[in-house]
Structures are given as C-alpha cells and as structure tokens.
Length: 210
Image 1 (spheres, one colour):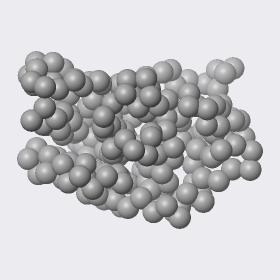
Image 2 (cartoon, one colour; image 1 turned 90 degrees about the horizontal axis):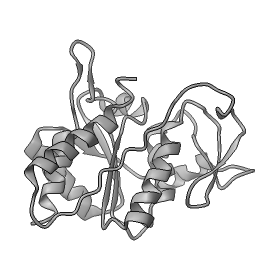
Image 3 (cartoon, helix red, strand yellow; image 1 turned 180 degrees about the horizontal axis):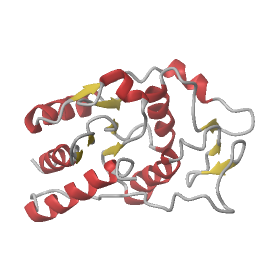
Image 4 (cartoon, helix red, strand yellow; image 1 turned 45 degrees about the horizontal axis):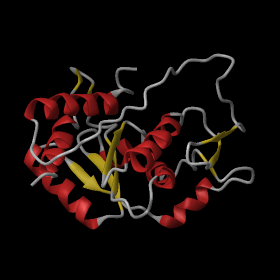
C-alpha cells in the first residue's frame, strides 16, 4: 500500500510544511480520507449500492475502484462542512493516467480556468510536472446506473477521465475544484516513493493569502 497512499502522503507532507511556514492570510484544511482496506464481512461486492454523505447513491461495479468512494465523502466534507473557497484533491486514483501521461507527469482535471492556470504556474515553479486533461462530459454516460444515481466505474476507455467526472458529483459546481491524479510520478521503481505533490500543494496553499 506504499504506492496507494501516495496522495495522502503528499497532503500530509504539505500540511507539515505549511504548519512550519505559517503563510499569512491563509486558512487551509488538509483532509485525508483514511480507512481500513481489508476483506471482511462488511466488504462491498459488485452490485452493492452505497449512499455517500451528500445522499448520492453509488452502484459498485468494480471493487478495485474503492479509493474514490472515500474521496467522495472527503470532498463533501471539505465543501459542505468546512466550506472551503476552493479545493484541490490529490490521489493515485487510476492506472489509466499513466497510460496517458507516463510516470513523470500528473494529470489535472478542473472546469475552472483560473484554478487550472494557477496550478500550471505552480507546477513550473516547483518542477512537479503536470498536464491539464479534458473533462469530457459525454463520458458521464459510462457512469450511468439502473439502480443508483451513478456507478463507481466506467469502461476501460477514458478511465482517468471518468474517475474525475465521478468526483465532480461531490463538490458544488460553484466551488473551484481540481482533481490531480499523481499515480505516475508518485513512485519510482528503483528508489520507491518520490514525495511528488507535496511541493505543489505547499506552493499553491502559500499563494492563497497573497
């Protein structure tokens, strides 16, 4: 699980750094949706329907697409409970992003052009490479379900995009939100974890008070 926790590790690393830097004029909330990921009598199986904390029902199509289920509730919490003015989320969400961008570039999905521009500039400053990816709305059809509001997984085609589209169901459309899939650069096969994303989050948060 050292690879799979890469998103959470980046967020925690950024939280530690921001606490030390204490940038003026910034209130930042670092949320990690941590839970046990082990087979037991409460484990989900295909065709189960879960209800997210915003009331959306989710049909389980693929039990390996479990991370987005905890991310859904984390996003609802950040948006509704905390009331964040803008949200960025990092996760090692899909293998599909590595097929698209390789292992040195993360993918960014957002409908907010200003946020996309900020993150692109942050990427250049920190050296953590990123690329804005499309949020092709027609692919939402892949998440259709006959028994729930949506399913947790689409087809094998455009999997990184449908994962991003899934997460959009849990943030108010008026809230600037970016999903950042760091599955590629978060891990180096020869040396292990890279810490990718921590610098990006730190720099972005630090700029919010300026």
